[in-house]
Image (spheres, rainbow, N blue to C red):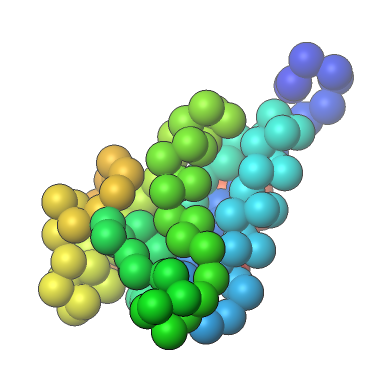
Length: 128
């Protein structure tokens, strides 16, 4: 129970899309912050091209051709909202030539079985 008598639910946000080119990554981040504001148990998973959302050194300036604000650094601020459970799919990261040292936040790397266990423990799963 949270401080106001409500039930705390476990929310898992699954991020599957590259950070730019669609609104999914930014929308996911906004929904995560809303969930955290309502004191829910929030976890984030990065799968497929979603692992790129956490990559260091993203070039998003007008000169890069993308011309949108780099919001990847916002993930580092999630800890201040009590969002500390960030997970990355091991296979997705490896297929894209990334390691945890390429990411701008601390994550836990999960294999397929661990990912399935994590998903089975959730009350609500939202995929972006």
